[in-house]
Image (cartoon, rainbow, N blue to C red; front, side, top):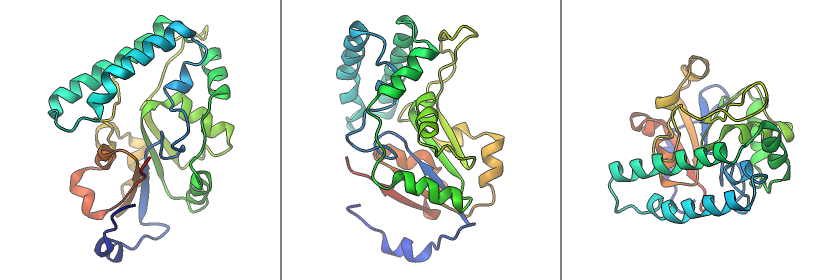
Length: 229
């Protein structure tokens, strides 16, 4: 961290029972050298898929990082980008088998200390909500592969659905992207029951927008940590 709010740290005293964790996945739980969960989904879809995916990245990634653009314009662009990427998976016949092989062969790497952190949260029964604009199937499988998909963890992300033959279904549900990735907008009864009695929040992310994972009305009760890539 480049900036530490010492007053807030002195005021907020975290105990094992009074807070929950809201944490990003790509470049937060994973390292800055790790591939992201979108890339980890499409490794088995061929060169043409990768070319089209890269073209979308070159077009929309600069918009995502441009803070001179209005929220409305950027929000619309992110919706188009993320849905276009999801449509590419469908167009190039992503299957459950290809997805599992892709995840296993991908360069997903934990950030130093992240696995130990998740383990400590589990041992102390502290709720962890992973909020990601990536692919939820990848996050879930990665944690399972590393024996740390604990029952105190919930994932809010873009999940790909498959039919009984293992073929991808068209993604018609809401797309979660960097601008709408919030607990407030996607909370379930299960998550609500886990965190309703928690006074404080520990928020970890790498994007400026990650601060919005918890409502602004709760920022005065939130310790935020940003990882610089």
